[in-house]
Length: 424
Image (tube, rainbow, N blue to C red; front, side):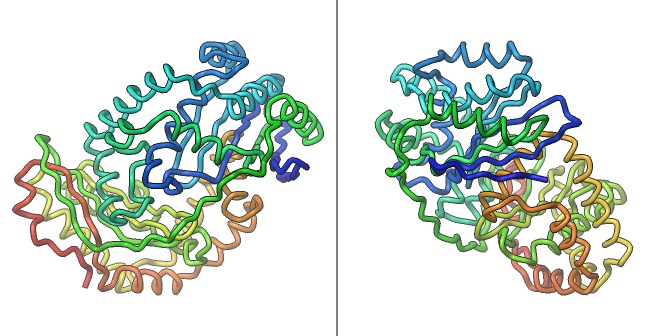
């Protein structure tokens, strides 16, 4: 079972002891992502993540890498649309050193002007690399198509012009406004006890995290509204990369449990309906899948595939036909039970990872205010009935117009221009 302690300085500690493990995963989290940036700050959340690895008043960038490498550990950072975190995975005996490195990075980054300019070039290369990859570009194009100009639609890395125009002063102010003690969640899982974890954290925070928590700036999130439109990008590639979808359910919507299972049945595995029909039986494409993701106040359901341009209309037609069958009640009770068993099985495999436990605890703390026992989540999943699935499928798919984005050769336009992607 997970344990939670809020320290006097405002930081939150989360721990799931795993005595059978010989490893520990420790993460520093803040409830801040790319959607929380102001217009002049686009790309700041991700850029800040990069800068925290560029050295502190106590350690050079090489020192940070060497200390963790010398322990046989791994260190990294992740920026998303709604949160940012930094983590280290190490042997349990080295947890103190790992936590020391993370807290030093979090509270004492230098933001050296030379490092800032160097990292700006690296991020610009990262953006170009993403733009060059048709699948990465498609994901960003679809997000912009569905959510228009809302901050949640914008690339986490920022756009080329955003980064080129960004100043060190703006980035440093962004860091100072948001990287504060009362926003900090320290999540750990592995062979560690809360008493030791708390002692280590409080001692290291006195060394590194002594700044006042009173000056932080709160993010002001506005719920996005979906746009039903399309985007077509011509590129000199052989395949068409296609994604369609619509708004779905956020983390606080009880319908998300039925949506998780419906997504599994529709297209999230090799045994799913879309994969079996379109890839296995019809042979129209190499890959096809559906996805469901949630945010704090909304969500997305998507179907994506890549295929030869001549197969494009046949794949779209096959998707329509399969969704029509689902609307008519073609899903069986046996399919639903298999989806529930798969959900449980995925959890059993995932929970073997201490990093997964660390991530799940912190994410749930941010979303719900506390880690949620898996038994409660499983109870919600097990309680979904076949009638719930029928009701959701009809409400979600019937008459629904999907937004879509496509990246492919110019020939795609003869199939896509004027296409209205709706399920009648």
